[in-house]
Image (cartoon, rainbow over all chains, first blue to last red; front, side, top):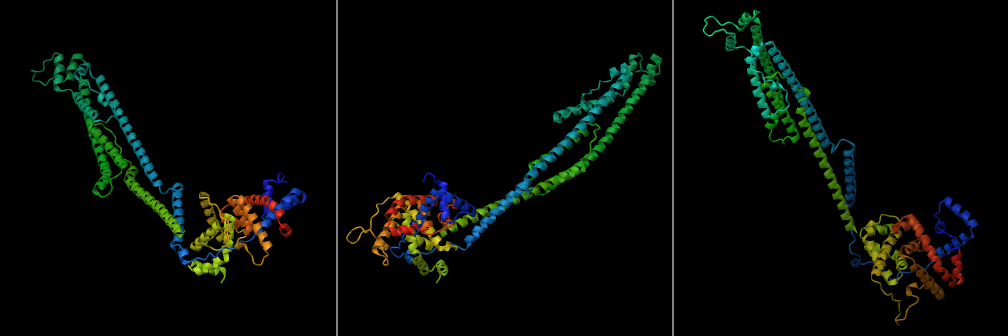
Length: 383
Length: 201
């Protein structure tokens, strides 16, 4: 009998005795019971056991277990605030979870830190692109100028007679090569080269000595003559029979060109200076403001780096001005200036918001922990 | 005064109200303690501990079956006693009379309305049941005592023992199987009158 009744069947029989089977389970069991004799015997045995236990003699207490004040002691009272602590800890924990979840799913607590970083990165990248663009433009312009100057010089040299070419100091065109390096040593060498270039340009205009030399080569002694010395043009005309106006015309042309170049340079320089002045005035405004308010916290390192980049950019403009090249400097776009002025305030405000949210989170966490501990303590005291 | 008011007064610190509750439930509590522990002296100590603990924790009673609430306290007190005895096993002493002879039928089992033969039989039955209960493990024994002897339903037993309902069902089935096997031999010794009573559906 024992082998045919499974462990599960014994549990079913026991539950059936106590009326713990569902309607469907009871019907199923009774249908089995009707056909299974061993199941019936098992049911009878279990029913008898159940009844025997229910009929077991009820023992009486050997004595009275009444309590005296000495034995009972003072009953522990739960402090009134214990339920409050319990609920307060639950509410504080819930609020903390809510704030933390909100940080991840909305632009809240930690997001401003990311915003600061992303804004700085975007602005820095933007400024870097502008800076690189200006430098490239500057280098392109410089290169164009050098090429055009070189071509002009070369063309003029070709136009000159061979005798004049020998007298004219070869112009050093290496200074016109565009360079992107802005180190001081390079700048100084550039300046010296540009000065040499200017001197060379001046040297194109034939002086009276040069003319005397030329005349002397042709055998003319002009040093003792009272009459004004023959111009080189006249002399060459006499010699060659061709019109001698070419040399004078060329010399005059070179002088005119030089004067024009100087005029252009001067005009450009003035224009550049004006634009630079405006740029410096606008850009120096935030610096002056920061200096005027020493109580404010120092500007972040990222911002200082941005301003340093701007100053370097201005320094390059100054160098270009000194080099007497016709570099076209475009003033800083207005929107970039606006960004430059507004970014420090935005970053500071965002940083303050993140500090505030972080403080709230810390307070909520401490509150939840404190109230939870207080609740546990009061419950333990209550026993 | 009804039980609810007694409990309320006891919760306010009225010791007399609580003692009235003690008088009403001390037999039930002692019965539980004795069936679980298996020894009268230890059961007596556990009963005293249970009532002291109940008075100190009366404020934790939130309504429902006061009997189930008390049974939970006394069951925990019994488990503490069992653990204490396992750490320091003692030789149980049989109750002795003034002549130092063992008392087979302790006074506290005596029922003046019952015939001596019946009293003896009931004593034997009680001893047989207790012997079979002692062969079960602590958890199985407690379940069968709560459901079959104390009359608790499955959910109350689960709440008292702090175990799931399914665990109560399986443990009860196994405990009843063990008791059935153990009591089969005893049934044969029972008088016919008892056998017929037990065989009633």
